Each structure stands twice: as structure tokens, then as C-alpha cells.
Amino acid sequence: MEKLLKKYPNLHVIEHPLVQHKLTFIRDKYTNKKDFKELVDEVGVFLACELTKDFPLTEVEVETPLMKAKSKILAGKKPVLVPILRAGVGMLDGFLKIMPSARIGHIGMARNEETFKPATYYFKLPVDSTERTIILIDPMLATGGSAVAAAGKLKSIGVKKIKFMCLISAPEGIEKMCSAHPDIDVYTASIDEKLDENAYIVPGLGDAGDRLCGTKPNPKIPPMGVNFFDE
Ligand code: PRP
Ligand code: URA
Image 1 (cartoon, protein in one colour):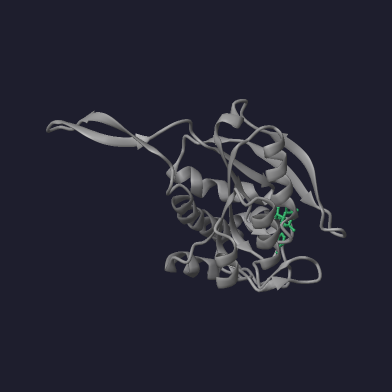
Image 2: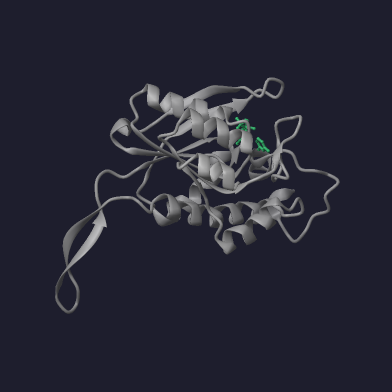
């Protein structure tokens, strides 16, 4: 990780103890769908705080119950949050908790399970997105194919400022994304060991989309706690 951080000034790893704590339960295969989503939202708040750290401010006057005072508010247009479907949508709520007025766009991308290459199936952004900062969101940066292609697509329509946030990344994905788009700041809560033969991140968390949507429940896993939505 140190090597990657040195090589790519656009890489940011969020090592806050609470993030690392929550990540452990996110990784746990016995964490049920409800808790998984809540934990992803909670980590999303930390990532969002870090990612917005350099957002510009402007001074305004405010009237407190005691007097007039100079204070600061965010300058410029609201950013556009762009989750990569499906799993990225599961990471949207954490960000919206601290910035509820952010705009929202969607990029639909699915990785071919044999070639691991991403294919775009949906693309819809607010009309003035090229004048705003785009925050691309996907919990998993594995080979990096999806994130690199999504960022390329955004640039091709004229977007100038992009940031990318994910929960877990593989060194391969970091290399690919940070070198293909050195102008894009990449925020991640973990750089894991490697990719396996199916291009899954190990140790990782499994399939983020399936765990967020409950599309592939594992019958071998005993239910932990009460979760009516798992039925
Ligand atoms: C997953 C994940 C990323 C992509 C990462 O999505 O959410 O979008 O794979 O892999 P990459 O870095 O190798 O491109 P998937 O294609 O499984 O779709 P889903 O979100 O609908 O489950
Ligand atoms: N997509 C996932 O959901 N998990 C991985 O480990 C890799 C890609």
C-alpha cells in the first residue's frame, strides 16, 4: 500500500479506526443484508467527508440570535453523485446524509463474467453535469475496468472534474485507475491483497451487488438475527 500511495498522489486510503472496524463486519459473510447496507452507508459518510475536504467555501453574512456574523458556505454548483449500477447505488445514501442536495446521475455497467470487461447499459446525468464536479461511486474497484470506462465516458461528454470513491480496491484496479486517470482523486477504505482467478477481490467482501440487493442468498449460511427482507 505504501508503494502505491507514493506512486499515485491521487490515491487516498481512509484508515480511520471506525472505518476499519465497520469494514470488518462488511467483509463478514454472516452479516445479513440489512446490516450490510447500514454499514456501507456508515462508511460512506466517512468517505464522503474525506472526499469533500477540499470543496471551496465562500463567505456570507448570517444573523445569529446575538448579532450579525461572517460565516462560510459551500461555493459553486452542487456536485453530481454518479453511482455505477447496481452496487454503487447501495453507497449513495451515506453521501446523501451529509450532502442531501447533491444531484444524482446513473451509469449502468456490468462486468462480463468471462472476459471481466465492462459493458455500459445505461447513462443518465443531470443536464448541466459538465459544469459540476462528478463523484463516481462504486464499492468495488477490482480490475478497474468499470471505473476507468465510466470515467472515460464522463470525460468524453465534457466533464472536467471527477472524483472516485469505493469501499474496497485491489492493487490491480488502483494501478489501472490511477494511471489511466491521474487527474481523478481515488478514495478507498482498503487496498486488499489481490484478485482471484474470477477477478474477485480477495479477501474482499464477495459480490457487493448481490449482498446489497439480496440476489444470491447463500443457503449454506445460517440466518443471523432477524431480517424480514431476507425471506
Ligand atoms: C461490480 C462492482 C463494479 C465492478 C468492479 O459490478 O460493483 O462495478 O464489478 O469490477 P472491475 O473493477 O473489474 O470492473 P458488477 O459488474 O458485478 O455489477 P453489479 O453492480 O450489477 O453487481
Ligand atoms: N465485484 C464485486 O462485487 N466484488 C468483487 O470482488 C469484484 C467485483
